[in-house]
Image (cartoon, rainbow, N blue to C red):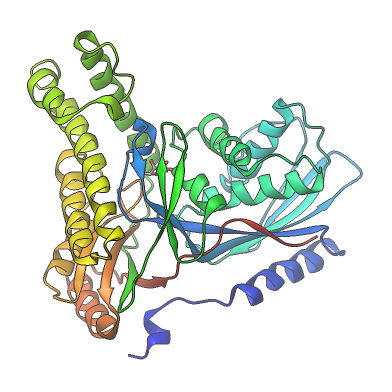
Length: 399
Ligand code: GLA
């Protein structure tokens, strides 16, 4: 198998000019602005963002490109090039669409509207190579891309962090997923060859260079769409809040699981809440610690120790937080059998999507072949391998 058949690579340049062309053939004129916005991976620190803990995401070289032209009226004409699907609406008619994909765009526009930004109608076309439902945050990329485009077209000069917060609010309030800030932050603040260590309590961040050398980041898309994720996601969030409420009775300074430590979980929380809530909270506290130790390993260029933390993170996500699924568990189990994979875990919200693996480059093809064969035999589905590079964040390509 040659590397082109084991990896999904698209020239981003070709891809964004493709969207510009799609725009012109659909709407009969050229766009005013073209923005590219990346998907993200997360190395470690899962389901910690909304618990105000730490995350370690990075933007990747898979993008959503958005082309927009202002209209003189208040109409909204959206075209999703990858699904050949269109939506027509009007500014101010903020109703969710049965098509779902327009909601990410409408949510962002509604947020700007509520901030008093006077919007224009628009023709908009988007598409790209972030597989949807794979846990690579194509929705955050769409939201950040549109936020960036409006910021430029209206010359608002909002700082990036405010665009991130607006995009997250769109997802929370309009789309209805109570997600944390990680995906939008990573999409907007991504930096080539660097991971972002983000403290979700105060939004302070630090770029950590990822010296991969002989290793590569291999994503294995389980081909299970994470459709359950949004409702279960909100349930996890509520369970964490129950834990915080119980802890606060004894430790009034605990405002989030970030303020909790292992002793509080084992000696105070355990006896006060149902086992399920105890397990959820235990996972979050442990994941924050794993991330911090893992980052120390990265700073020493000790990828092997970091990889062990990834495996441990998966056990927690699967057994305590219960956001994995048989397919993801099996992909990690298969990865454990491979000497050339030094770390593997499910990534993102869970219930499907990808595993993230740190693998020695020369072995990628043979390992992918072995894992694919075993996975196909068990689930009659073929996992898609994706090699990704860490990339820069949302940017205007032309205006
Ligand atoms: C989804 C959410 C993020 C984060 C992850 C889990 O991707 O959008 O905010 O909570 O799940 O780490």
